Length: 302
Length: 280
Image (cartoon, each protein chain N blue to C red):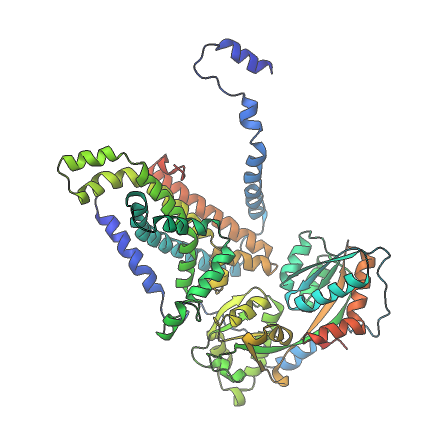
């Protein structure tokens, strides 16, 4: 064996990683934010809540002796649903609530592939409709809570973000959820609405923001984690998640006019325990359940 | 079992009696099925589907290209730095050798999520080293370099283990003979030691490459996920699965399976079956 190939290999090993490092400007493949036609704001607003919130739901008692209840819920509901589950388990002896959180779109796939669930709480209607279309849902979904978007930045604010316009500044490292995740879609819609006002935000706002996206995460909590760690300069999450981030993150408001409000639908899953599901949904819609949710930064359904 | 009895009867004095066929093939059957069925299902579903959409084809092109490139760079780096390390571990006594030995083993037992957190704490923007790099204008997070670091972290031990084992097993008498015949230490290394170790080094490199190609957890936590930059095949597959696009996820998985099989087969054809068993 001659020594030359090995020497070349060694040289490549030393040089290659050095060449790959450096300033973080993704050189290839820009996935632009695709905005709908200019007439969009009204359309986007109209498309929001299809189902109306259930008015003053009747209280439904859990079956005598409890049972095992499995709830699949959007990642943003984690803390609120954990508290609701704990309260229900404390007041209903024999009731055991299992919670499974994830991106709503991943939960739909899991349910479709046969995961056993009794209740599905989604962060948007598109995923609830996808679940309905594949026959996973029993009954009519109802809106149980709403959630606005907010920009989160690390407390040290390395990107110097003060308002949405700053997201377009050169070199800002922005992390969004991917466009198939509800919060990722809402975030892009909000950015499109923002860009539709070129007087306030300048021409090419959406393109500039799109060029700043460094990562597209699988759910809202992954976005938050990247900001908490300080890896990203900014992320767009729900207001409720911004609160979960605690002292590690600061929240920057997105103006009402360009914000998107997520309406969360909840429904019983076909093939699940209907009685347990009905009781859980009724509790979530009750004043107590709504109180827990608003305590975590959500807005009431009504 | 009459057949076995008959065999026993015909070769009573044979030096080696084969184990009963039933024992050799039936006992491992569950394991064989466990290994084969998921792959069969993947090929079956992938082949009976509608084929890749235009969007899926673009994801495949970007992600597979990125996966092959990053895993090749990681493997080259691991071999480049890992060979001298393995040699030192096998041949030299030095203070802290046991600690280094342990250090090499740890990434094998650590879950990738631990690797992801640890890499963030070291090379993240506010990390131990990352904060210095950041001050110097170099950020690693969300770049292709972060993918290579994550892959190298999890895959290096597999190569270093194999290489150190190879260096330990070489008959020292051959090296001594070469030295007695007047070969310099370097000449002995290149003409005797390295050729003897080569099959195991290649086997180790293949193992490390395979591990790098499959890296998922540390990458998604440390490097993020962006098409063409950090979204390798495992991340793209997870992303499609999570987005409810199971069809594309299946086809991407199939593509990765085929690419891996072809690469392994090519390497074996190139260097012979000596690389067949990485543990050897």
